[in-house]
Amino acid sequence: MIVSIPSVRMWVDHIEAFYILFLALGVFFTLITITLAAVHLYFVYRYISRESIQSDLYWLIYMCP
Figure 1 (spheres, rainbow, N blue to C red):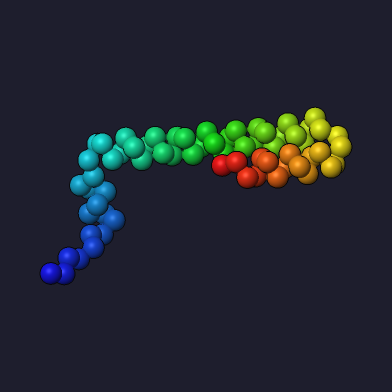
Figure 2 (cartoon, rainbow, N blue to C red):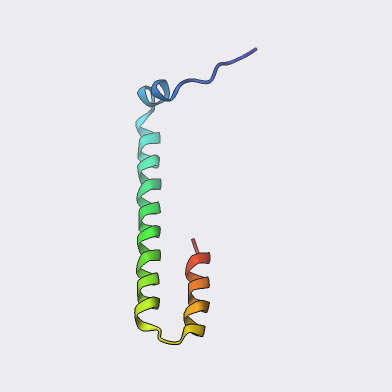
């Protein structure tokens, strides 16, 4: 039994509201994570003057999400 893979257009036309909700939530939380990473990066760059401490904090910032 061979089942063909539906096209993206067909999948989007027949997607249920449940899946749309979870796709939107995933995009929302991804944007929040990226925004928080940018804020943390800015504060480390702006307020930490010692480069050795900055480099350690950059490692932590880039590793979390």
